[in-house]
Amino acid sequence: MTKHLDELQQQLEYERIQQQLAFLNYQINPHFLMNTLNNIHALIAIDPEQAQDSIVELSRLLRYVLYEGDHQFVPVQREVDFLGHYIRLMRIRFTDDVDVRFDVELTQPSAGIPPLVMATFVENAFKHGVSYVEPSFVHISIRTEEGRLRLHCCNSKHSHSKPLAKSSGGVGLSNARQRLNLLFRDNHVLHIEDSETVFTVDLNIPLQNKPQPAVEQAAGKDKAGNEIC
Amino acid sequence: MLKVVAIDDEPLALRQLVAYIERVPELTLVAQCQSAVEAAGVLGRESVDAIFCDINMPDLSGLDFVRSLLSGGEAPLVVFTTAYSQYALEGFEVAAVDYLLKPFSMNDFQRAVNRLVERKQQQLALSEARSQQAAEGARGDDVIYVRADHRTHAVALRDIRYVQAMGEYLRVYADSHPRPLTTLLSMKRLGEQLPHDRFMRIHRSFIINLSRIAHFAKGRVTLNDETELPIGDSYRTAFEERLKKR
Image 1 (spheres, each protein chain N blue to C red):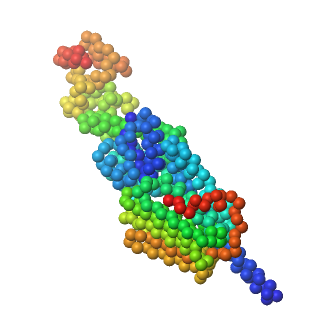
Image 2 (cartoon, each protein chain N blue to C red; image 1 turned 60 degrees about the vertical axis):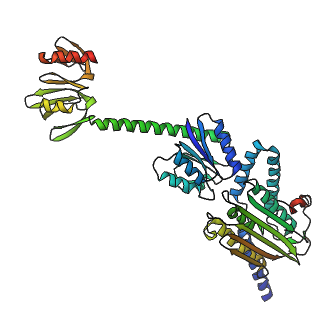
């Protein structure tokens, strides 16, 4: 009887966490989607080939968010591919004056991580790091080593950058932090440094070592995602 | 012809906006700007009828920019371009002529231009009416005040047909008043208040509104309400001279 109660309680706890996680899940930012469509719309007249490429990038990005965003784990390579699509789509929105770097070194590309676990940090880096009037940068690096994934993400800050806590980025970051706590409890490190000129995120999470079922399409073909910018 | 400024921080978005502007003959592009600060500089130098302005520019949000514009003197008309939903924008209560939701078609753009043109015409008509009013106000002659029946009546000059002297009193016949207004005033005093280009004394007892004359013959003038009035001998020459001039 007690055992049964324990199980029931565990089940309830599990469901509660799943519900919270569903609430905290990354959702595509409609503003990003509309601005990207607007840029592609302009590109069609200027550079049809790049416009087509961009639509393919956007389709792959959407497919990942829509079909794999609710998986428990995805191969880390899939997440990296997604970030590559995102970064290349952001790239068409500003000039080459913005210094964007995306360095990836995956020794265990098929190890599992929860999907979209890095998305909020990368999105924030672009949202607050890019300036159209002064030199700016977004540097992202992702490594896997000894069963762990390390994300280092930093961006320049500008005179016009709003304090994070007051902008929507603050909500995004706090949701991401809660989600990490639910997913990994103590087994992760999220270090955020907000200096005068640079905003830095360091994330360290465990890799799920059980090999993930290969996702049939795209993932294999899109290996080029490693050296993107 | 409307002089416009295009504002968007994203180069491709700005290029598309400019391409649309250049396709509309009613619009002249004064400048294209990648920031609100840049746009503020242009607006300080040039006269601009309307701006197309992106919201969510990083250095100063489009809304703040437009708010600061509206707080100073003659503000240009505003069309917002945005990736937000219109619903989200309306909450900010900044008076925009239209919203263009990105991405938008040439048809959407043309609709916004039509609204701009319409609004500009309204503005022009309004300011014309105002300046006309101001000019009339400056002459101070659109209305006279007549004390009668224990009140003071405002009587528009264009409504006055004629004025008749009755002893110490005057009777003012006006379209706006079914019965003549009887007031204690001399012909001389009233004559000073009525503009000489529109009214004339034709008799010891009569002043007429010149625009009300239907016809006249020797010694008599008929107004267009069929009132027949005598022309005094001593006023006749001046009256005939006057009508020759008109």
